[in-house]
Amino acid sequence: MTGAEDPFVAEDRLIRQARAALPNDPALALSLTSAHARRFPDGTLEQEREVIAIEALTKLGRDSEARERAATFTQHHPTSAYRARVEQLVSHK
Image (cartoon, rainbow, N blue to C red):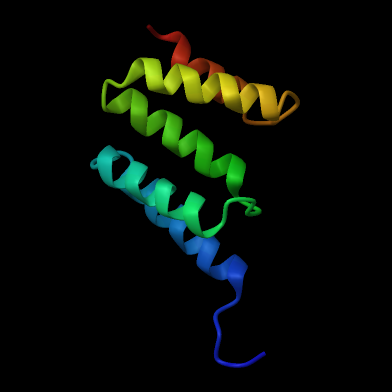
C-alpha cells in the first residue's frame, strides 16, 4: 500500500467524529453523516451512519425527516441489530 489511507480507517474516522458530535452538536453530526454518505455510499459502517443521522434529526426536532429515514432504514435492513434502536428513536413522538 502506498501513502493512501485505508478506506475503512477514513470511514471509521468520520463515523467516530459524527458519534462524538451527536450529544452537543447534532447539526455537525448530521453534516458528518452526509459527508460519509457521499464518500462511502455503500460503506461498511452505513448502518451506524444512518442510526447517528436519525438520532441527530430527532435532536434537531426534525421528527418527520427522522421517521422517514427510519422507515427507509427498516425497509432496507429488516433484520438489523440496530432496528430496535431506530424504532425507539422515532417512537417518542
